[in-house]
Image 1: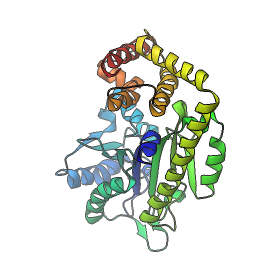
Image 2: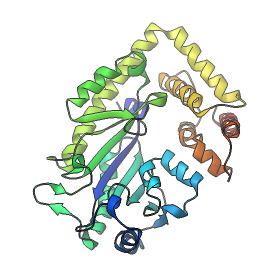
Image 3: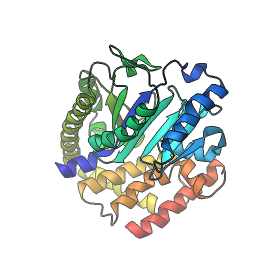
Image 4: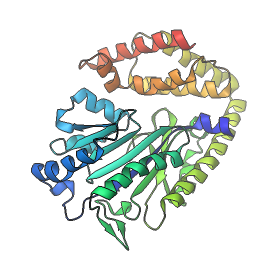
Length: 333
């Protein structure tokens, strides 16, 4: 079962929403309020926590794009750049979006199936904030948040999953409906209204009201384990029905990634997913699977521009992406 989980679960994320009592939500704050009553107090709390603090207006556009691609900030925070900030741990596992929809959106992202560990790590930072700031809480409603679905514990537990088998067998909609009845939503890799490019899906609790943090995590974990079983069966079924065609698609994808001159991000995701499926089925041999999986972040447009230390037109980004792929596959294949 561990191998099945490893082949299906990409990452785990815990997110908490918090607001300071008696302050308006960010949408109603002045720049002075945001700085004096939210940003500066948080900086003081975190100054000995191995975290760096950035004002959004001081972050270069290409760096903002990279942070979005890595799920460390949201597009909404970028739009609030005059009042927004970001606290980021040195290992980039923990981040706090400041003055996005709520005063604080704390989150911890870990690789693999690690929701409980992510909760434990984030809870340490959250406890520090709770000890030093008057956080808005109601005995009946729980934590008071800008969005009603975040009332209660204000926790969003998310798992990023790679589900090519269920997608190719056209069973993914049945799975989405089944987990919806359990209070779980399935979205694309960038959340609401995003597409499931490369067969990547994000599972998370629909609301946090009326359930403890432990109950939310357990509910997501139970659903993920069941989906992993279904995905494993779907991959085997699809492989048995279409072995020659599937193998041909996967090996063609591998060939393009190893030798392309230019490749768009959309095409990269499609081909990456096919090769990743081939690895899980056991007939694509990659020497370093971590390096292969890291390509998912490294080949995003923002990451490539940061790597090259400049803004690049789309055609140049596509060429740089291809160069990185060719060089990496020389090492890992």
